[in-house]
Image (cartoon, rainbow, N blue to C red; front, side, top):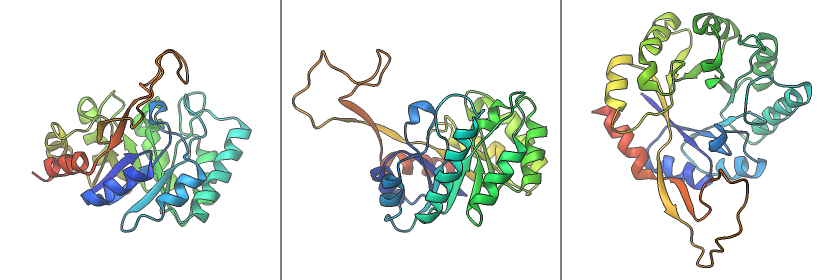
Length: 245
């Protein structure tokens, strides 16, 4: 089984590689569900050997209905990721009615090839999962990342199992979202996926000793600035060990 780790730093790429993961999905701002990382981050991540690098192409957080300018940004970001040696890109575009935006998805796939193409959890926002899957199979995406249109994979397992059956090897259904070392064995035994996607985070205190408490970046609803969540090799390995029994 292929293990893909959701990461947002070069250090996390190194941790995933150290743990023996096969691939990372490189993002920025996972609090927004992941947006396109900087060119510098992609370039430095590509220096980590022996691990596949897929880059999310998402210009902003929020919904998956994009303006013409945002679509142009996505095209440019795919070209940049491709030029930096990425192995794949991760995309997701919808129509206002909650269907896959077939025309624009097709255009981005053409821009990305011969790289691998994943359709991300925009899939979970579609109004008809089976119609969306059929459209993505027709478009030729390599895999679909999904929680089974539920808050987590564990809750979405019944649909994920049906999606895997319907895909019948024509594309990969990759469960991802809320997978931990505690539930991964059940997910793997029931769904029997070819690939799984997960994040593995530990708390890491900031190295700052001077910590002003009255000044902060961002709004009131914000992560603590002196306590970060980082990907660790041990946490990645714990999930992988749980999946393999």
